[in-house]
Image (cartoon, rainbow, N blue to C red; front, side, top):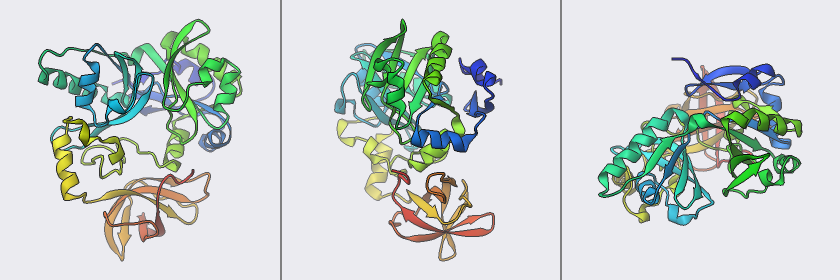
Length: 360
């Protein structure tokens, strides 16, 4: 199957992007200056990512709120229209995290549900299941991923530089959502991101994506690829689906119980997750730091007193800290300061438990 192309594919190739398959899409891994330079540009300046590979399922109608409440783990009563919320879709049987999702509550009866694009069908199927379980309820749920691009502008200078294009692009507060018209083009802006830095994500009609990208880069904002986005999210201690979340991993094991609200009533997978809560988790996600430049790697065994007790889910060299960092599943009684060893292809790296984020 041919990978899907971003609306900005021609732009990326024209400026020398290294393209890679990612979640069923052909996306830029890095540009001419490379991942390390892009990472540092985000930590100390501003970058723009094309994250059009994220899905968008638009859910509308008077019953949209009720259906989303029953489908996902978090409680929309904790926010209001014009806000965004992080949540999970669980497997109905074993409470594994099918996907982690940001919901943009655009207006009272319009929600843009933002899964990883490879999971869009799972999200729409889950919503259909909920609708069928509720008498007299209907919604309009459609995959609008192909109709728009999403540009994520991130970094300590992101808002300042965006304001030189249009103050309306930069003024949306953290985890708020606003409609805006830029240069005659309707866009939706959310104060969200995946780097640990301040910034916004802008959904723009696909036909106008190149125009907005050009304006953003002309303002002095550096293009950055998914390689830098991954090292940035790891420094921020943020989970990645397929690594810290996925089949066999629950919200509680991943340390993301704050995105679960049992007190709101039944939701998909709530019974299985409540059972795990009551008996206690068998493992937990934790941060590990190592000395030296050799990085821990995904899948590396974690040992304590010579016995394998866990596994690295994501690991890399931290450009900001100058040493290795990792997220790993460890025994549930592991605590900050505890010592472990990480087996990287036969070499043992001394590691110490820390509480993420690694870079604050």
